[in-house]
Structures are given as structure tokens and as C-alpha cells.
Length: 313
Image (cartoon, rainbow, N blue to C red; front, top):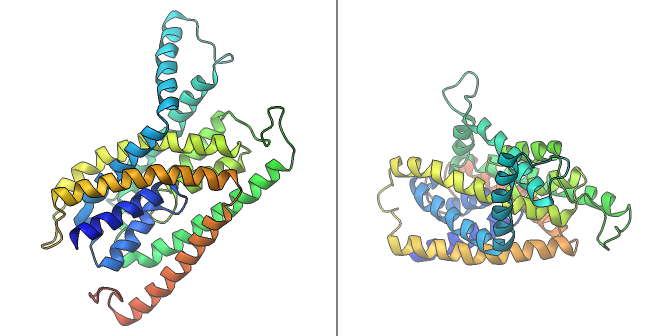
């Protein structure tokens, strides 16, 4: 059962981390079905995220390497006084915008007024099984954002074809774009809000070319996932594991490998769906899952127990 659970969770994490359907939301739903407390397997969940981090690094290794070289070159220009904001390259612009998009994440560590919790704590609080209705409701929010993004993309494409043969849309982010996407990413820490879907939709609302938007979203996810894993590892080691729910080392490794492989495939799938204008499938899917989750949650609250595991809520 442990290996089956590990493989299933690896598949779920790999698919949902990059597909616009919310990985945290789906992990909560799957844990609810298995009757597993998400908090007691916190370390396992963190390691699954590390697996998907490997996937995106492998997929975008060329762009990552170009950005690294551009960063080194940029430092040289700055220290020699040769850098010009007006004449910055595309890669240099991307580096600056990524940094700006990451800054809003510090909001997560600010205290919520009137409580002893930070915004990050509130986000993690809703990941528990007893808040299934919250996660399901936020999946509906993801669906709405995706539909808005689809509408905005159609409006942008209706303006014609660019000289390069690509559908219209800005290729470079500006400071306001980066800030808006960064704030959206903070909101997407709530379980049920897709990070990739919401940041893509936000970029499309701003008129960014959809393929450039998805590349930016995935690259932005690298430091985000890495930082999340580093900060959460401490909490993971301090969180006690319920008896009988420990995940063995081999099962942990299997889950990471599965999440990495499936994650790589998920990026390919996402880019294909975006290129062929089939994003409505994800928008419809998240709406259906959200509605079903809310219905199940209402029934369980009336019954007082988990319909799948039989455990008391």
C-alpha cells in the first residue's frame, strides 16, 4: 500500500505541479481519499516538490544556462559601468523581471493582523483534510482565472499576426507585469489555486504572448519551489508522523522519481495544450473537480466522517 500511495502521489504531484489544476489542491484531495493526514507526511510532500523541480530544470536547461551566462555578463557590465537599462538584452530583462516577481513572496512571512499566524501559516492551515470545501472552492477560482485568461488570449490574438509569424502579444515583461504576476503567485500558495494557471492567466490579461508567458511561469517556479522546499524542510522535520503513516526511504525515492518523470511530461503536455488553444479542457476540469469536491464535503460534514476512509472528521 505504501508503494502504491507513493506512486500515486508522485503522479499527482508531477502532473498538477505544472498543469494548471493546482498541485496542492490535488494532493489534499488524494490524501483525503486515502485517509492520510497531509501534515503528518509533510516531508514526503516536500520531496515530491523537489522531484518536480528537477523536471523543470532538465526541461529548460538551455534557457537556464543562457540566463546564468547573462547574469555573469550583467555583473560585469554593472561593475564596469557599461550597463544600460534602456539597452538591456531580452535575457537581462528576464532576470530583472524574475527578481521583481519574487519579491512579493516576502508577504507570506508577514503576520496576519490580529493573529499569531503569518500568511504562510494560513495558507498551510487550509491544506488539511477538514478544509476540503475550501480547497474545492479555490479550484473553482482557478477555473474562473483560466477562463478569463482564455478570453484575454483570444482578444490579444484577434489583433493579428506579428511580423515573425507569431500571434500578437508582448514578449518582454515590464515592471508592472512582473509585480502583478508576483502578487498572483503569492495568492497561488493557497491550496486549490494553480500557480502555473493563475500566473499564466494574469500574464495573458496583461497582453503577454502566451508561449512567452508559460516559459516565464515555469522559470519563475524554479526559485519558488526551491525556496519553498528549503523553508518547509525545517517544519517537515519538526512535524510528528502519525503511527502507521511513515513513508519509507525507498517509497520516498520512488515518489520523487515518478514526480520528476511525470512532471517533465506534464510540461510538454501543457505547452501543447496552450499552443493548440485547448486550455478550456483544464478550465472545465478544475470546475468539475471543484464542484464534486464541494458536494462531497457537504455530505461528509452532515455525516461526520470521511466517505472514503470512514474516519471521523
